Image (cartoon, rainbow, N blue to C red; front, side, top):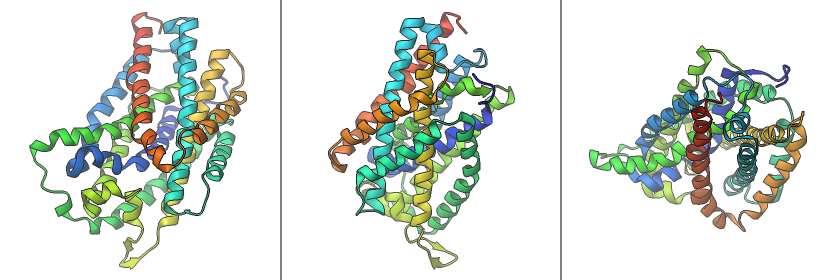
Length: 362
């Protein structure tokens, strides 16, 4: 990797954190409540052990790999040149399609909440155009952007959640007994699915300057991400109840539309929409960057930026063709994309790393 495009482990961790805020805020609380019902406000806590275990496994599988090797390099070493490149290309193809899903998700969310008179193509094209510019740039630039934005995002999220807290009713949350443990675990599945997406960022490992203490930084950020997931689910479910949380699209947005700050009703749509747009932009840019990085490694090219455009074109095609309308899109959002995502993050990629480890290639 070029010496001019290096970032620290902390910077990569912050990039992951800000990126994963996008799908975490998008799916919650509806996805968790659909599976876990009333008890799903505890599901984020239940997802923590599994998320930590997956992260620890990935750390163990990559800890002895030389600095400068990304996941695509390790797949090629572990599987052999032909099979390794084929596997890496499959991952790049999926990530380009996933990028299209993210762009379409962002467009549908904006249309259903604050811009009902807008058009899906405009939002998709705008999101992809901005993300292309970021993905074609330096890895450290995107990571530093995430670093700058992170304190602002955390402050806004804290203020919004704190302001929504007085409207929470215990009647909507309790009782929860030991008999609800299955529901809690079911509700944890979509939350864990979001955290598992941190696996994709291993493809950027070749740009990271490794440092011993930095290896432990990911766990506090993982805990903070799940704490936010816990708070969003708790406050939404506690305010709206189970039935409304399931039936209302973007239920959390509905909760905070008329929150009170210092006893005064404030309109916070613009602030929340800004959080959506920023996190969607960071995540989509990172996904396009990762897909292009994989193709760079697979082809042996010197520059990643050349591959960003075809990856974005595939993402754009997927965004337009994935579904006819918002209702048809729900099938992809609720079932198909999460299932494929889990297949890559929990099964295929860890197995690929394990094979290289068993063959003592790194």
